[in-house]
Length: 323
Image (cartoon, rainbow, N blue to C red; front, side, top):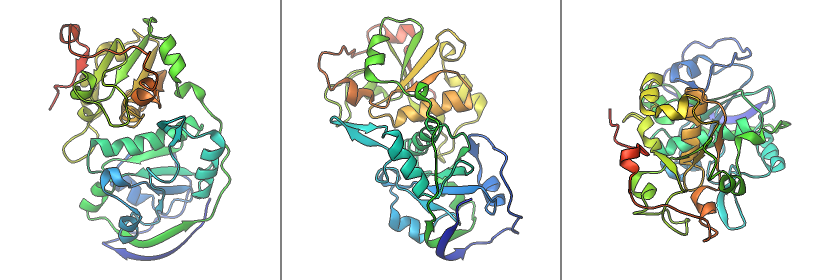
């Protein structure tokens, strides 16, 4: 269990402490009550990843965070990297092992990821970090549903100052099947057993707009559009499982396809769809395409689709649910 050194000030009302103990894996999502009840657990590491996407920063972390949380900015700490001009790529295994170990996380740690909790796009930060731990072979990881916003609005205690972790040794057991490279996506275009799932909003899916880093608007051919923002309530919490199951088209979940390739622009929103499908709905063989549209459009010879065409009739766009 990593040790932490901190100069802190507690605010709010602390519940009675519970004895330190190992954590039985609570699943991919935990609520604020669960986290408060386990703050003293021996193997717990709370990882605050707030960043520019949610308006967070190191300064915001030092002002107030979940007691005991350590800080590792999603955009700056090294969770993603640029490779050959493509942003948002997965770093090499050695770099990720060093990052995780530097945060005081070892192979016995249970990690709870705390994002800002301000909107659906913000959840993508937590989903991508969660995916990274799974890619490294570490299953003892959860996301705080509602993030720091939910924790704060519940009136739960916060700490100021900085918590400095004592470095640990983390050894990865990589799962390359969770990741897919551009060449493999290209090779799958004529394979009906592979479904390409686009997490972007309608304007980008249909090619009316593009994200800045992408070179050309459009989508990978024969992709199903499933806007990741559909899976969240107005208060930033993920919808109940039964509502999610009602949103996702049957052919994604009924075994009609062997592999689902989740993509967006840089593998950020795609991580949310990966999380919803593989962790909430327990769909097997969902792979994250981290290069996504930035990597796909880097080579202008790769095919693209734009416009609606017959897509509405074919049910290729899912974006109207607003329950």
